[in-house]
Length: 178
Image 1 (tube, rainbow, N blue to C red):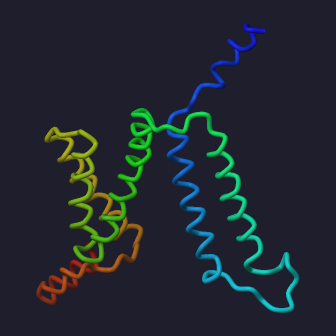
Image 2 (image 1 turned 180 degrees about the horizontal axis):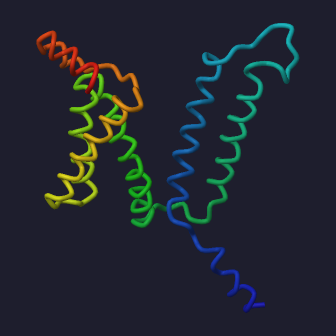
Image 3 (image 1 turned 90 degrees about the vertical axis):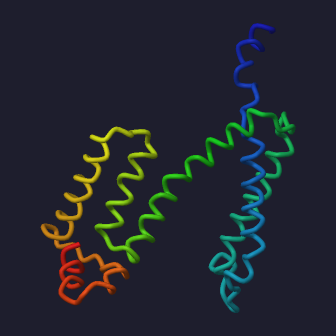
């Protein structure tokens, strides 16, 4: 009997980060459930299963109920350092979508070429490639990407707001080509 228990011991170990994940999930589920009335509607003379509010309500109630049961029966309810280290790993995954959002928001302000010339070397630096050849390669890559997208593929990307400060002939050239 003890051999079976010893064999299954690995599956009974506490997995780090479960409590924090479950707490974040139940808070998200409750907040969505509280918004249900203003985000969906109840239509008169429509069957229950066809109501716009019914299936979102079923899923959100299920999310709250089952996450609550998970938290209730979780064997370890005390947060330890390993939980916070695991949470830190989750938060770090948000960094690169944030880089992308910064890049996307810089494009209408600075324009496609200047944004790309800033973004690519900054991302190269962030990834730890800090030699001059890497930065030169990044700048060359940026130029090639912009030329290919704007010239050969004829992708229509709006010019940056900063182009408005250029003289007319220069502004038109930059809007059409960069």
